[in-house]
Image 1 (cartoon, one colour):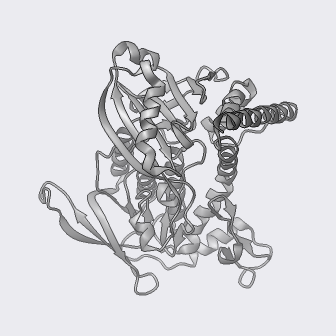
Image 2 (tube, rainbow, N blue to C red):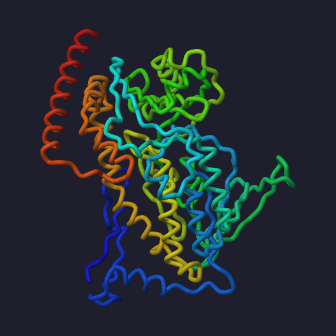
Image 3 (tube, rainbow, N blue to C red):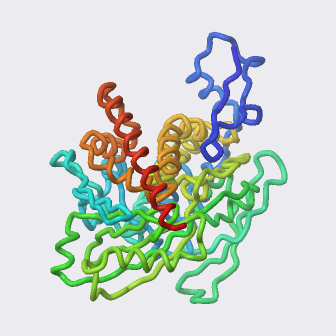
Length: 464
C-alpha cells in the first residue's frame, strides 16, 4: 500500500509532505481501507484506566467553546480555561447562515439579519449587494461577548468544567503517555482580584487562545503575519439606526486601509465601525478616522461606547500540531484573506479537532497520540484549502491599488458575481459555476482590470 500523505498548508502554499506523511505500508496489508486504518490506529493505543481521557481547552472563544462542548458530549473529561468571560473582541461579528444550523444557534443571540450590503469604492461609488438572496437567507450579526458566552455555557451544560483563569505555561510530558502539566492563575470569588496559582494535569491540549496564543509558543508553532483590527462601537439615534436595520456597509480605498477594508456593521442598538491593516499598523487610527468620515452623516452625532483593538492572523502557522497538542481558530491562523472572516472557521476547527480526539480515544476510553489529532488537520485542509486559496488570490488582485478596488466594486454589481459570492459565503463551499457565465465573468473581469490600469496611469500622471 502506498504511503498516505496528510496534506497541510502553510500560509496558502501546499507544504512538502516529507514531515507530514505516515507510511503504513510495512505494517498493514494492502487490501485495508482508509477507514479501517483509523480504527486500527485507535485500538493500538493504551486504555485509560480508572478514569476517562482528560483534555484541556485553552481559550473560551468560538473555537474553544465548540471544542469543549464536543469533547464533553463525547465522554472526555474536559476543562475549558478562559481569562475574560466578558471579552469583547474587535470583530465585525458576521456569521454565515450555515453556522446557525450547524451549531444550533438560537435566533435571540443574533442581533441583526443582514440581507443587504453596500460595497463602496474609493470614489464613493456604491453598489447594492443582496439581490440574489432567497427569502430565508441572511448574514447574521452577533456580538462576540454574547456568542462566546453562549457557547461556553453550552459546553458547561454538556459537562465541561469552565475555569476562569489565565493560562501561563505548560510542562511537556516526561515520558510517552505522561500528562501535560498546565500552569494557570485562577480567578474566582474567593481569590478576588489577586488570583491563585494552580496546576492541571491532562492527556491532551487544544490551543484556542487566539492570535497571541501561549499554547502555540509552548510547542514552538512559529510566527505568522498578522493584521491589526480596530473597531469602535457607536450608538446612533433610532432614526439613523433604521437605515442599518438589515444593512451592512464595506468601504474600500487607500484612505480606509491599504490592504483591507473598512466596515459599518449593525448590532442590537449600535453600529460597529472598524478597519484593519497588515502593512501599515502604525496608521490604524488614521484609517479608522477615514472610515468614520466615509460613513459621514449616517453616524454623525453618535456616541462611542467602546473602543477595541486586536491582532488578526493572516495565514496558518507553520506548525499547528505537536504530539498531543493541537491549535484551532485564530491560534492556528484560520482567518480568511480578503474577507477577514474567522468566527465560523474558529468554531468549525474546534469541533473538528474535538471530534478527532473523541473518535481516536473511543469516547475517552483510550489514550490519543499525534496520529489521531493529525486526522483533524487532514480533514480541515482538504475541506477548506480551496476557500482560503480563492480569497488569497482575490485580495492580491483587487486590494493592491485604488483603481483595482474600483474594478472590484464594479464587478460586485454583476448578479452572477453576487450569487456566487453569497452561495460560497453562506454555505462555506466554493460554489460551482456555470461555464458560460464563468466565461462572461472572466471577460468582464479583464475589462474591469484594463480600465483600472488605465485609470491608474492617468492618476500617476496627475501626481507627477
